[in-house]
Image (cartoon, rainbow, N blue to C red; front, side, top):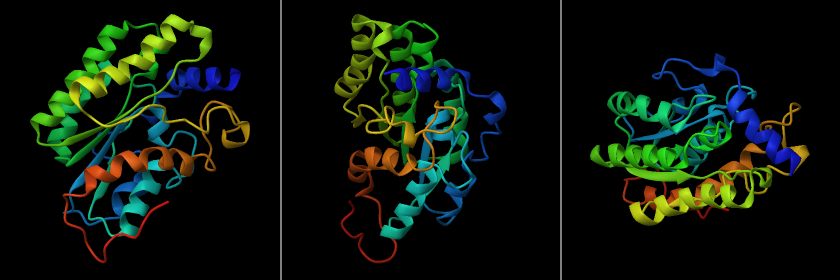
Length: 232
């Protein structure tokens, strides 16, 4: 469990150097896989989605863009994730991101830093709820990515944090990946040398966790090229 705790602490302390202009994807190769006129999937998260500590083009967001292109889905992927981001920070940034990118789908991966900083979970849930509403107001769909707190935070708190995502998914009827780091967080060989963030070997597993919940959101969009093959 120590690795999971270290990872979560790393989300809150990752360098602010990853904060770049919103219009420029952090994992820059992700948005160049598809044509500029394709519908947009906007990934809106923290360091786990920002490609922190990874070579350019090796994060799970870029892998997602590559998989979509390989399978013939006509989407462009834009990464507007920021290391160390909280739900309050995300809520402040999201209107501009929606205005800039006009996404068809928003993958929302925030909340861990709120928990680590001891911010009220009710406020975090409210911020996430507002982001879902803002996204829907732009006729975009939402995929919510959850995170878990380590047991060191106590059974009551960890359960409340987990339930924050479950409650949002249920009340707002949005698909949920309960734990983005499932199968990764407790495996040191899948972590970077700092033992804080998944390494390149761990990135495909993050995508595997996201993909099954994302696919149903892609179906109504016209595809380019041959019909997508069955994915594993």
